Image (cartoon, rainbow, N blue to C red):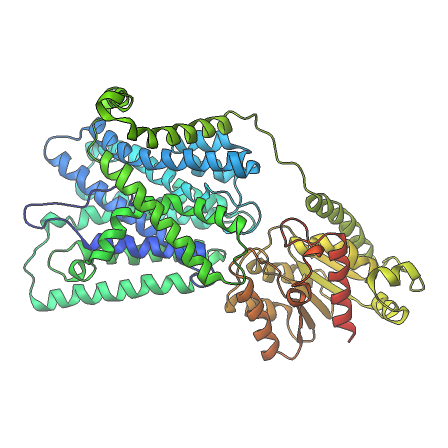
Length: 617
């Protein structure tokens, strides 16, 4: 970031600039970007954020300790330096994004005042805890601002940590303070574990207190590993040891990007803390002047990305959200990910050249004079208006969006139908649990015609005892399913991830609602890895026939991955049957609502018909 976003890397007359930290930033920002673009490819890329926080914790604390040793910390200068670098990029992103959604995506204007104000006050992460959607819900109404929670955590650290550190150093010795910091880091990790709840990850994922351990581990490293006091001339065995630790921790860091899962309890029950500790060891080997990690992680590419990492991080989400709203990326996820990445890089480069670099040493006291000079046509010429006029237009469009009265988006037909189906399904499930499932008229010509089923097929379907587990697509179709299969016990929830399913299955089994035939509709809201798929199958257990419906999510990168996983599972397990809704619906856009994922009434009928036909064949 710079998410370490703006920490000046250490300089000293002996050691110079720690160029290898740009390599660590590059690894972190690439992890985050690839996770957002292709979550099925790099499921643990979200762990790039702890690396950013570690860097911030280390360099901020190191600078504060050096200034404290030299006679005192100038807090005004410290705050001015940090926020004069953070604000320009953030404000630019907020203005351009607000202008875009004002013109092209007005549904996103809901809560826009709160989003902008909380970001400008650096408390957006706390607003997200109480108002935002899950960081891992990648389908329904993603916000182009979600990722800015990290800036809130960083900025709160910048504001509070110098005060806390000064207070600690006033009453305790450095030796005591360093162990207090380690204790605070451990307590933060313990708090994350205690507060974690699978139904609402937001509290621990966005919380400053529950994410502080990464910052505090970096701060602790600054106490025990101050670079300017480290010996540059080490013997070969010491150098070899540091290099070995660096290589191992770098390998573990990158490996975690591919195997970690942000939706399992283990991540919050110590795994993220352990990962941060490994990252701290990696950082220690990079900043040590006697090791080779700094040199190994130094190259022009890492330097280029490291210098622009703040902009890359800040601009990524708006680019992805707006691009994917217009382009169906499911058919060609890699190609579209490359296009999105190029757009992010181009925008970040323009921002770096024309905003970040020019303002790096700008004296903000000169702002009034600068503005006057902008409008001095005689002195500067008319060409400057080619930039000023578009900038003013964007700004005023953003202001118009910001001042628009806040209205919740109108409820869509899909949302209304899901709400109605949820109530009807709950009532039907209760009757099924009591053994009072309503009967259907298998002789009904209208029912036969509506679902394209014969009398014999309806009769068989009416006797089927099935359990259907799914997300919002299943919730939407549940009423249709229970019309034809009256003994179908449906457990569906909007936003459900595949990783949620094992706990749901366990609960259904405990309450006697897991029938021999199980219908699964999972994968709409995000990719599933092979471990999740195996856990779902194992949770259901032997003696069940599983009918797994392929996902129709043409706007998301994980569509092919999810469907391939389902088909691979069917090849490995004789009791798993593929219900290929993706193929069946591919050429029938008229079956879907505007989002091209949830069905309309006719689509729900076709969805139900395919399920019944698949079970009866």
